[in-house]
Length: 175
Image (tube, rainbow, N blue to C red; front, side, top):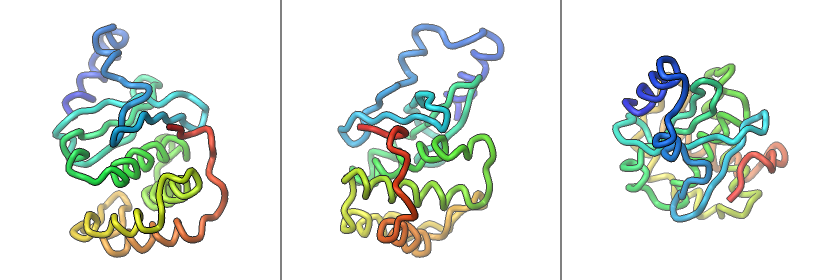
């Protein structure tokens, strides 16, 4: 949170991000050892900021028209590789689906579904991988922002994996 507040301060007061800080906004971050890339619904590259003390695994936002995914590197490091990728894709989905512009309570479920759907479509996840997320969601109570409680969220994600609505937007996420 401190890192994002500092970026907002730099954009508002300083007119932008200094060259030294620009390196911190990655275009192709390494997630679980894989180089990842995300584009929003306009085709704009989403930058990634790895930080700590975020209060969550990740967060999607826009700062001065720059789409950003913040990731808590300490929390992410405690998760298995496939779940790290899932969470990156979940935050990417918020940009792909335009949730940053117009969020709803359904947005979190849509981002979960898009992530599972894309992971299946791109060959990143097997059903067994997605089943393996369950212990990590088990203790979650959900959130006021629309995250489902643990077992419900796991079942929802598996359903999305098993019965995708459509082929996901291919350009929005690449590795």
